[in-house]
Structures are given as structure tokens and as C-alpha cells.
Image (cartoon, rainbow, N blue to C red; front, side, top):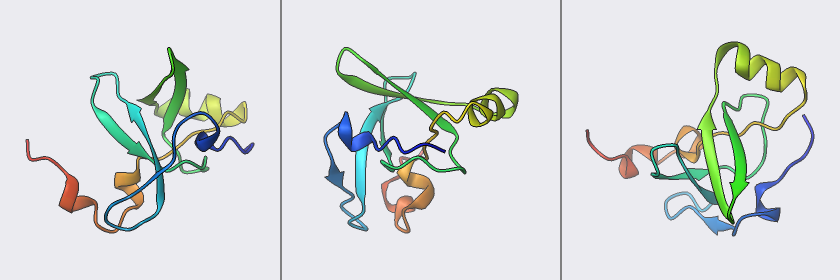
Length: 92
């Protein structure tokens, strides 16, 4: 998968729990979501930049497989990799 570090297009911050680098994106529901800035073969989020706002949308199944086959970078929510993610999750 090609390198497409998101810190080139979005401000880098650090997770307040684990200290790892993150960038913020907006979901289709306009919620803020922290992302790991490096693409990963395990990724399930496609990102785009619109009007200087980073957007992230989940992809799965054939859509995800097609993007992977095309060597498009996919990312993970930092909630997936942060050892302290449960501390930050909102109750539904």
C-alpha cells in the first residue's frame, strides 16, 4: 500500500491517552473521529479532503477489496488501536 501519511494534509495532534499521533476527520454524520495518520493493510476507512476538512467514511466488502486492489490507502480509526479507547467512547 503506498505511503499517504495524513499529516501532510491535516494537523497532527497526539492522543491524550496513549500519546500516539492522530489526525481528526469528520464522519458522514459530521462527528469528529480520530484517525491513525498512516495507511494500513487492515484499514477500513477511505479519506478525502473537501474545503480543507478531512472526511472519513467506512468501506467494507467488495468496495474495500477494490480499493485495496487499486493500492488506495485505507486508514483505521484511532479507537481501533488506542489501548485506552473505551475511556473516550460515548455511551449510546
